[in-house]
Length: 92
Image (cartoon, rainbow, N blue to C red; front, top):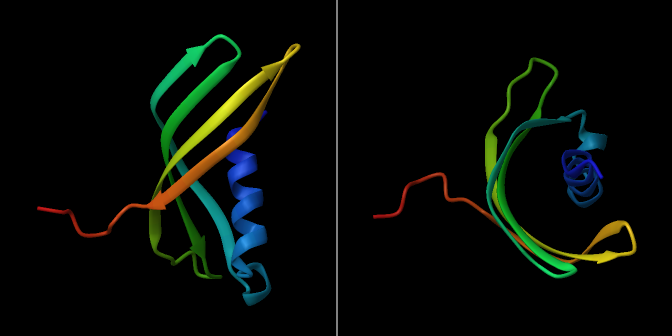
């Protein structure tokens, strides 16, 4: 499974920005932690992306993501998850 491709596909479906002439650009994937217990795994990471206009301009966004995976046979599948946008202003 290509997690970057999965994230991109989800963003394209949810955003409606493709029809507005914007192009999704995946910027970075940063792993945070993974815990595996038997056939269940929880993975936490950050992704950076931006929607670019025809001139390449756009605002970069960072999202924290947690996914819960289950292994069935030789295949891992996401069974749950959540995401939260990181604040553009650092918290004090």
